[in-house]
Image (tube, rainbow, N blue to C red; front, side, top):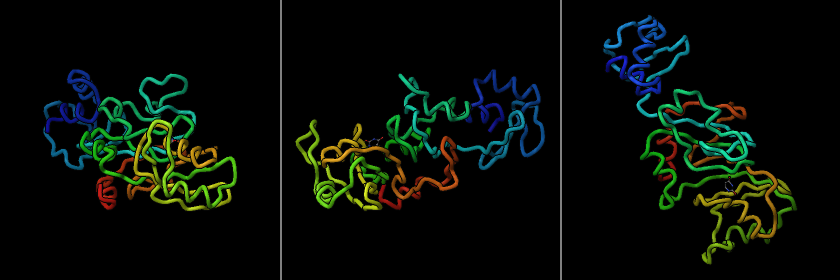
Length: 235
Ligand code: URA
């Protein structure tokens, strides 16, 4: 692939902008400056740099972000900064999108990708991808509430009860709740319908993919095999 095209595919601007970067000597490939926009490289696993920052060519981008509270999962947020402001500009330019959403006040695992079919497989209601949330509640959680969450609670916009596929009590006011749907405020509404109230919500995993422990709040990391991890859960 020509260097100019390769840079464009990785979010480094238009054809003109990519050429300008190359001609200015700002692009390195495998450790050497390359000033020829037409120079051809095998893109698979190619290590390149722009202004000294190293990148690896990736046909598709798959990322995990540890979402902090106080960020909206929208490109055009209304009241809080956008989660997209936590990602570097080449990733935004190549069109990564959040895979599903977390509320402004929720924290934890948020995936991003520019692979449309991956996003569809993760978010399609028919795929039933399990998502595990650590839920801290205002009141102690009793057995009756756990039973209600597991057998199904009614939400005001749907006569069909919604159930959690697992509910593991960790502390008096804390459970790990597994749900397979991705509806608006789902966990908060389920917990409210069971007679309690969510005080803090943290997504621990999606499919077989856990939030990496090394990732602090606001940090993101590349995922190389998200599909395999998610497939392990039948996605
Ligand atoms: N359920 C909620 O209520 N909020 C989220 O952000 C995710 C699931």
